[in-house]
Amino acid sequence: MNTADRYAAYLLSNYGAPALTLVKGHGACVTDDAGKTYLDFCTGIAVNALGHAHPVWVRRVQEQAATLAHVSNLFRNEPQSLLAEKIVQKAGPGRMLFCNSGAEANEALLKLARLHGKRRNGGVEGVVTKVVVAANAFHGRTYGSMSATPQEKIQGGFRPMLDGFATGRINDLASFEALVDERTAAVLVEPLQGEGGLTVAQTEFLHGLRALCDRRGALLMFDEIQAGMGRTGKWFGHQISGVRADAFSMAKGLGGGFPIGAIWVAKGNDDLFTPGSHGTTFGGNPLACAAALAVFEVIESEGLLEKIAAYAPAWRAALASTAAARPDIIKEVRGVGYMTGLALTDAPAAFVAALREAGLLVAPAGDNVVRLLPPLNATQAELAESAAIVDRVARAMPAAPAK
Ligand SMILES: *Cc1c(COP(=O)(O)O)cnc(C)c1O
Image 1 (cartoon, rainbow, N blue to C red):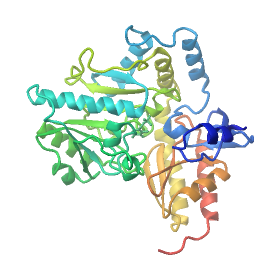
Image 2 (tube, helix red, strand yellow; image 1 turned 180 degrees about the vertical axis):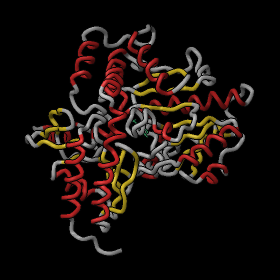
Image 3 (cartoon, rainbow, N blue to C red; image 1 turned 45 degrees about the vertical axis):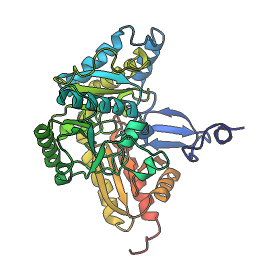
Image 4 (cartoon, rainbow, N blue to C red; image 1 turned 90 degrees about the vertical axis):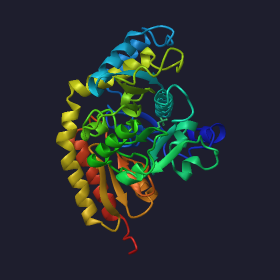
């Protein structure tokens, strides 16, 4: 039996059949079991922030694994304290809670919202509980985060959902104003929708949400799981608009490939969780925190945020010129920084497969978007190569029938 056979025999079929078996990676490249190498702009869905096997990341993980991997939160460990300090320096005055994935981080935000609602309602729980989210949002697959994800393809088959969620539309402030009321505990949005298809929440809209939440006493919470950790060129996506968050979640790029999630909670709300009110066995273990500290170390020492700001415009312009050459295939370039995508005129499967064939791995999103998610340390040559592959593949696509 090979890997694919064992997948078919022994793994549940919730993922469909993956196209490739990957065996090793180096920098922005990965190699499959047939020995073919690809430029990896899927990056494990925005996870491999430093690409594959970055020497600093490898060394930090190896050193920590050989020193102390796990202790539980019954004891302190230094890497967790250092990582919390580091993130608070980037995010603003507040405190951290660590967990193991994106969905789990959003669960913590939803529990924070309940505690906030209870406090606001004079200590009586169960009344101020509504959470308003955005259409096309993606917040995860656990019951709370799935209930916060108003998409049939996510929720179908698993109802009843948790109640108390309402759905506005991104960049439509009036749709949120109609839903945020005295029973609303929080608004939860992605500053830049990832799975939903790279819709950017506009600055005026986010400031409008801020004012609305302030008026109603609701928390403004961001899901930074995909847009965070430098991917947009800022540490966190909402920092582009400068809007103040009450709390936000992060995961994906945080550990550079090691599973870790977290929430940051602003000063003033950082006393809502009290001893015993929440927890996780693995969260914040020294191995995961050492991996995340290595990601911060490399982003800073290699000046990666500055590089993203410097390199992204030319890369996106090259993609835009391909879109202009094949408007029957590519409608527009979407997103920000290294969270960039192409909105296609059709479902993305054929285009994704053609790019893979040509040596470029990307991630589909929504109904018609392909995401290009370079590692944050991609070189200009790698970015240019990705754009050249996209151009070649797009120009070779058969003409789409006029619609
Ligand atoms: C990936 C993602 C999640 C879920 O994270 P998991 O680690 O898969 O649970 C939640 N929100 C956003 C915006 C994401 O991109």
